[in-house]
Length: 187
Image (cartoon, rainbow, N blue to C red):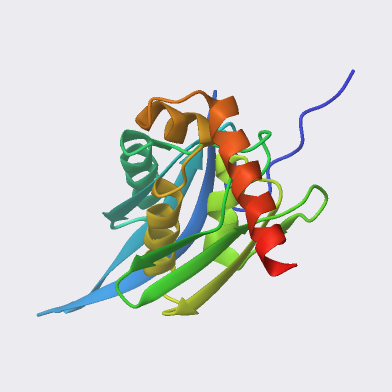
């Protein structure tokens, strides 16, 4: 009997969703009697089958901030088309503020080559093979938003074919024909 893998640190398994805590920020407000501490949490939620969302929650205690962030993440789910259920269909760039990320599709067995906040997004969306690079800001909020920006730009051959009123097979034969023509012109 196969057991489900145990959740990693900062990861919680819900009925169909996996939650990953990406970052907790402690903020202090100075008031007459001293400082008032509060916490802000950044959480990524996904079903590991192509749906993922992120949320931000603030509260006076950490568990309450995480709960608020998780609820916010579940309300903002997006669907990401995956190639063979494990990687991206094509390379894509995402930006948010000063954060910029480059995501590249990878062959099977590569694994997730990514930094902390981006790794959490890939694990919750269900991507198993990807190479990524973050450029610019290393702020976790900007990196997560830039990664989501890139994933929203991801498109599947089925989606492209539907937009162009073609069949997927026609789309792929056109690509093979153009690749062959490029090879002939180089020779």
